[in-house]
Length: 81
Image 1 (cartoon, helix red, strand yellow):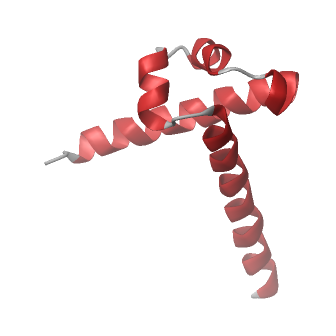
Image 2: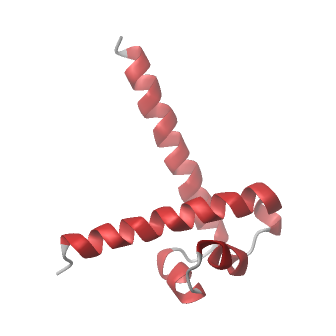
């Protein structure tokens, strides 16, 4: 059983990965980015990074999905007025 604290720590790591990876993608693009560089940027080990995501493409997809959810939630707020 996973404790609430462990779940919170996992979410913090996920956010850390997405934030660090976004910076790497902004600088290097998808083709130029590597999992090594994302791990360095986040300050996490490669094993930890691969635990959360099997490839840079899945990290990129998660960033895009998170951004899309933000856009949609913002649109819903505007539409409800």
